[in-house]
Image (cartoon, rainbow over all chains, first blue to last red; front, side, top):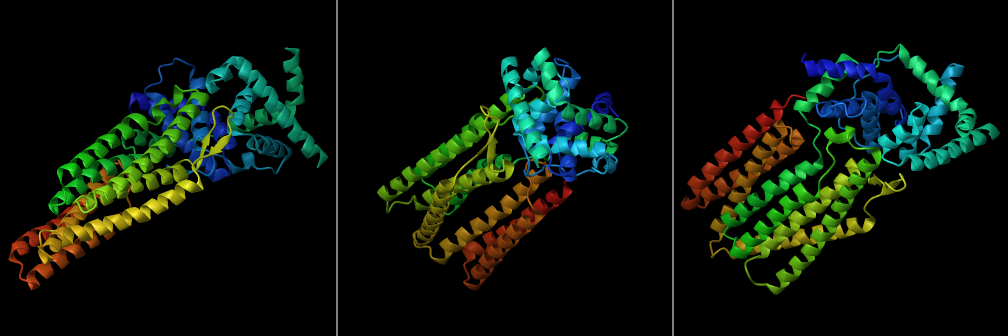
Amino acid sequence: MKVIELEFTKLVREYRKTIYTVCYFFSDNPTDVEDLFQEVLVNLWKGFAKFRGDSSPKTWIWRVSLNTCCNIERGKKRNVPTIPLVIDKGVMSDSDEGGKQIKMLYERINRLELFDRAIILLWLESMRYDEIAAIVGLSTAAVTSRLFRIKEQLKSMSNVSDKS
Amino acid sequence: MSENILELHELEELKAAYNLMDERLDGQEIVSDEQLREAMMRKFNDIRQSTKEALIWGNLLFVPAMAWWAWAIGRLSLVGIIIFGVYWVASLIFRFFILKRTKKEDYGSYDLKTLVEKESIYSKNIKWCSIGSLIFLVVFFLLMFIGRGKTEWIIFGVMALLIVISICIRKLVIKFKYNGQAIDPATGKPRKLGGKWISIIGYTFFGLAGCFFLIGTVMSVIDSAGMGWLGLLKGLNGLAFLLASIVLLLGILHQKGKINVSYKLLVVLTVIAIALSVSVAGIATLKDITELTKFSVQTLLSTIAFPGLGLSFHKMRKD
């Protein structure tokens, strides 16, 4: 394996959870997650030679993952073959209380528009507003107001589910 | 600060679920060696080519091929050369300078808003190029009626077909590649692209273009200096050779990973080319048209050899 390939492999393994999380929240079903994951990997690899550390690897990974998933959108024709992920399928099942919580999170985030989905994921990742702004390309003020609106939307979803 | 804490409190349920998911993923390997190998291989053997690239290569190769065909059957005049030339150059400019898409390599350097803006601009350009092509086509048809009786019918027909094929491919690109949607950068909401009117106009023009193409072809055969069977057979021979060449080119482009073409399509084109060529050779022999017999045997050989090579190239791609 070449040095660049080793470096890439190391980076992807380090940030595998980030990539998976983004793909998970932009997908419709487990097969979708695998397809999106592969698409993100391809785009990461394509851009890896150009990545010179202008931003942190974390920011770069988030940016490529969100850009890829947002751009592909759901229902689009995939360009890559599906390769199964090495993950315990039970991790995301709603058989226990924790799993139910994760499913609830998924359902709410999945109802948001693509751009909002990206912003809320970055917020859940505890990124600073200026970091979110840099990744999505909005001003910090715009991110703040947008986040406020998204949170209101999430809260209203919460109220609806509480009533039902 | 206090506002942030309040927000966190209200949405702590979501945060907790997110953190829980993060914890659960901690012990998971997730990415396999196979996935990494597949991703890294694609940098060098990039088969993720869009219909747009097929269109680029299709147009750039198809226009000279059609010009050659028109010349072979004696229908290419100076006006035709100019029209083909202008369209070919316009295709080059449109494809390489106007219809530019974001490169996947740059996904890490663009922020999300810039990316969706660029993609939106690309989609808009596709739309305006289609409208521009339609206007061009209308002017063409008008010119054709003005120039009625002259020898440019077939050229106009071919041009009309080319333009309409472009429109159809663009429509397919929008439908399948973008799912008929683009993200509006201002709102972040998906926006529907294209409309029914473009389909109606597209199909109408497709029908008209087909008719004119047929009229042009028939006229050219009838009008080919009173050559009768010889004119018709020369035309069919040219068509067979053209199809064979297309199969070879498509096979090479597929092998190089520039486009994705189905093997079945190449086989169908090959069968048509060989059938045409065999018919020409048969009729030429039966009618004892010595001028064409030798030439049609050569064409027959090339209609077998070229697609043969094309199909071999198609099979050589490793994916």
